[in-house]
Length: 264
Image 1 (tube, rainbow, N blue to C red):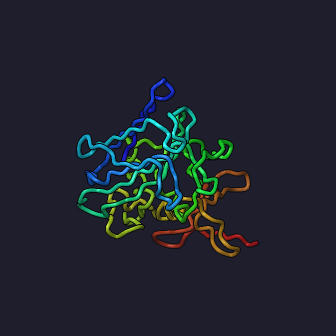
Image 2 (image 1 turned 90 degrees about the vertical axis):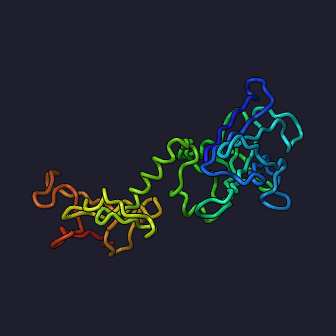
Image 3 (image 1 turned 45 degrees about the vertical axis):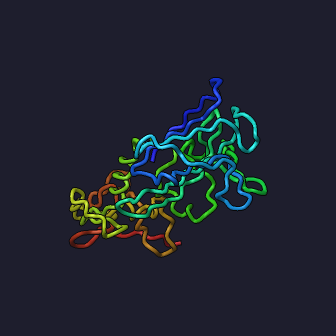
């Protein structure tokens, strides 16, 4: 799904238009797009609730011309939280409804990572000195979703790169020995990547190093460093005559080179 935000306020206009492109037709009565969080009775409550207008089966639009929270005209600096809920019209596979992520847009500035403040847990921009990942930083994670946050597309990645992301993600989850996908047997084998391990190797796939696409945790004392690259060499720092420059602790045939563990 792609969202284009056309903000006319900084140029003296009075509207912000949200243009949405979907990969499947929405249910015409449930193409919901909500503005300005309220959250008094439920976390899904907004001041301005409505349904997008259909341009065609894959394009939808909705505009806002006032701040429903302050009951004043829109102005630069207004916090406009929006939530797009995807209710699909008889999709060929999967669920028909996917609840969207709340996104904070600051008028005249753009989409920003957010945290909640106040009795009603309204959204506010996270201070920029906490944007350790720059514009790719995610909003503060208040649910178990944070356990999977590194497995998602970053929110500032353009929709035109979405296909590149999922193709690269498939490589990341592919076994370079047999081409299988580690998440589900329903994903077909990636034949082009099978048989790429060689006689000696460190791990069978990228995901073996990066659980849930994150960093590998240090092993316990006495356990092998199976998720680390161990550099080796001779006494002068040159590649070792037998091991080369990188230790390969696994082997497809014969004995592996060696293993390494933390002794203390």
